[in-house]
Image (cartoon, rainbow, N blue to C red; front, top):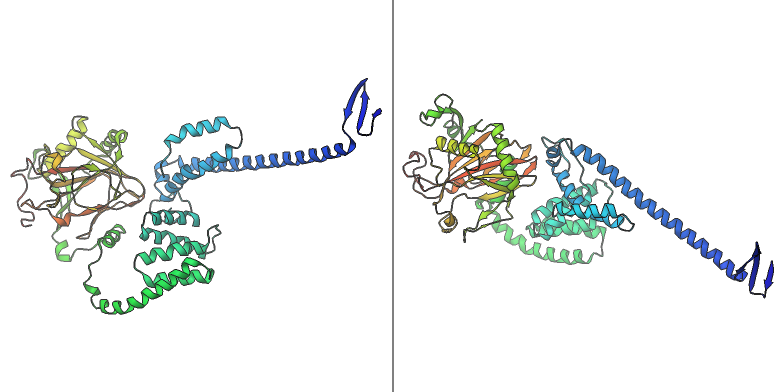
Length: 498
């Protein structure tokens, strides 16, 4: 060893001299290295944590996928599973991507980026719904998220439902990052917007017990109390007239969708029959008449049983699936086809020349109704997944909608024929709010009714809706039959007057 001055140390190894900094600097380097090792260990810990998160995610998805692939349609038929799939694709896979992008994982990221184009663009509390075999619980956060989406769309009715569920689960002790203050804030305002001032006031007071300094709640409390004092005098006079107020169509629609149908009187019920029907000795049905049931009297709704085979249904679905697109409605003012938020389904149109089966189906409808298919619209096939619905509407064009069906050039829609091509575990009924009729979907059946009186006037009692599908998958197909070419074809005995 040799020393060169006081600030430099030189050590000779095998005749090679290695120069070192001063000892003070060497001590600093030890601390530097120690910091580097600590940083390295932190990095390793962070990477292990990330890797463990990815492993847990993969293991969870392995189990979930194995369950789902045993019966994909049944699994997605439960609304909680369908919602969580969309949520995973929209949010959680994006979070995982951000996590993985912090490391070099080109294979995974490139594959994820490639597959993203197939993802969807955007949970009813777990319950014992009929037909459910795949259940998944909803968290407070799930309920709050759905409520917030409804709130952003100014849908205060559904905001209330989801926020109430979130609050209920918090009250029952569910652990959550969401606090009651936030839920109560949204809930009280949504209820106020629906005119329930008393409940809004009580919820606001409850919020202020949790957070006395909540600025918006304190302002709302004063406003609600002021509104309440003014309403008390108005309510006293209105109470006497309450029995005269009609029940809103929305309430009737939802009541019927829940299965709370209006029962016919015994006298009216006695006029409804079941029969084997051959359409006045039609040659095709003399030896094999069809099963026909009177479903309702005014409007006259006929229910056909075992009218389309399962093999025919499978073929129709096979032909329709490649061309399913978001369903449209005819704009009542312009007549142009366009999408609408109150019709949530996918549909496709099948023409008679595309496949012999479609021609046979059209002929079957003509033989049983006695109405020509020459000017009828093509067979429309519709698929309603979970949440799919078509709110109350008319099939015919009304007098104040002169151009509603103008583009077709075949007059108004005189009648509607609807095939049910699947059973639905829960929901999916066809309901008539004005009269209280409910028809539940049953695979292989069909319903038929006239939309117009013989005079050509529209029958407003035929206003109907497709209830939301709660569990399962709904397939239907329909024919809209038009006035042209129906001269002298329609029976004259049904509902003669408008």
